[in-house]
Amino acid sequence: MASEETQNKPTEQSSSDLLASAKLVADAAQSTLRNESDKVDKSKVADAAGDLLDAAGKYGKLDEQQGIGQYVDKAADYLHQYQDKAAAPSQPADSKPEEGGGLGGLANLAGGFFKK
Image: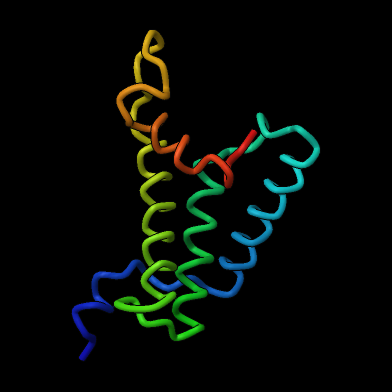
């Protein structure tokens, strides 16, 4: 029988899915280095990076309750939440992204990773 912890996790990624995620993240990094970050779909990149962290935790047999494993798990969850929130309706045009949290606040927290 599968444990409750295993049942709550998203489905496992195939090797080809993980390679596609790695390529997407690498392409986004290259675009950013070329100052073409406006061409990057940050939502998709966040989801792909979350998938890679999920796989790293699984294949590295990291304990999700302690040590580095808990941080890898939290980071993967954060990235997946970023993707989910980006898919939700955007905020009104007259509000500033840095005010009131929301997607703008989330993007600011991810600053260094998704820096333009």
